[in-house]
Length: 150
Image (cartoon, rainbow, N blue to C red):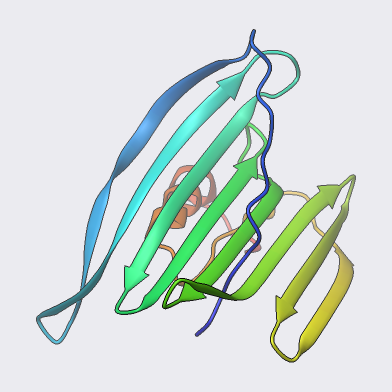
């Protein structure tokens, strides 16, 4: 599965407070053989209307690298998502999305072209990229004991 997103810089005001809530490295194994790793951090951001979480990570598998960022509300609802996939140091795919009220605007840039789409996001929805382990943190923290749209 190839997934990628353009890096998007989000300015954090000087008066915003950031606190790491989880960070680490996963080793990825298939059939007992190490095939890659994932480094990540999840931070809370508070102040100046930026309350919520920011999850950033890199997933390395062979010559493939995913760089991913997910910004959420305090309840875990997705606000901003970016993912960039590169192979041999060359960007091969970029995905991005942004929540605007109850609409999600997404964009994919691949070698075969660019696509954009908007769709409604039901209240209580969470976001998790299937190739990114640390996104499970949001499902566990905010989805426990209920049916959750992902």
